[in-house]
Image (cartoon, rainbow, N blue to C red; front, side, top):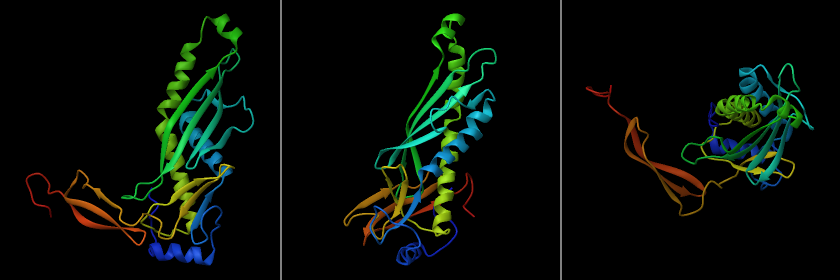
Length: 248
């Protein structure tokens, strides 16, 4: 799901939104357009995604043993957040173990294909049993291994679900305005994520980047030059001819 969707107007439309002050600006410059993803939205998005993936895949996994909120999002650094999930596992005839999931998520974008991407350098799962229960049963490693495997197995689907919710929220706040450049990301101390569309701030004078053609195309590839703060593209990539025939 891409950020540059239906509408046209691109840079001019983004600039018009900024000039009309239709979107809030905080730590960004006054001329920037800022879409704010507040902490409450992020926590709901994570909870919904995990419920639709890991919890749906294993009915004995549920939200429980909550210390505070089910999902807690906090700031890690300029463009990253930490996420803490409080889950539990139904053992039926014994006290249910706590399942704590600690995740680090970074927000980023690749200039050649503007899109919100989520990097996940950390995804830790801990299953905690009462000490007396482990001693009495002689070990419950099978439960821990099963829970970890379910959550890790659904990791990519969970992250993609979160990303789609983020993209949808950004597009709604922008009014479906299309654009062809990467925003910057700023995580505030209160764990709100600001998606900043700066006026002429994609790149610096003199920057140049090269992008090869995708594997299903052929050509010289694309060269990107920074012109007045924006990436301009030259080059060509054309579809490859099918085996044994000419490209129609």
